[in-house]
Image (tube, rainbow, N blue to C red; front, top):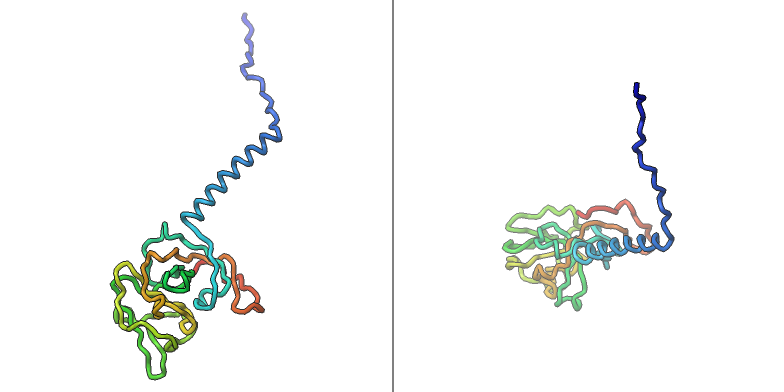
Length: 210
């Protein structure tokens, strides 16, 4: 009788060749370059970081808040209620401002004051419910544009949430401006500011802006 023979078909294991230090550095730098390139593209074309300067958006935003901004390369259709950052050439040499969109093209804006001087904003004849404002709006001391007014095509009407301490579309140097001046939409607070330099930072405010 013939004996059964077992044939070993397994290949001998190859030992992994040690990676040299220079190769490790090269691969690390290679990966870092790709990561930096991707992050740069995101922050150039999609996201920006901005800082709030001043109290005009209190209590929604405080002085010194750091925000992420959806860049205008992706944000092209502002809507009422959006918080945006804009650079208006006719105001403070184009210094960036952060405000809330109240009305867009084709909408009529009116501000009516009662016997106590308290103002209410109307859009297309309907009084706005504005839980985000800091306090009741009084008639500003500076000269305002004439109301009612209709927002022209491709423009926006904006106001600060701290109505009594905000230069916005009521102010002639800002007015109703071209939406192309909008740099982007404010998305999130990523570092909290504070109303007063002696106040502690409230990290519970971090998150999506409403």
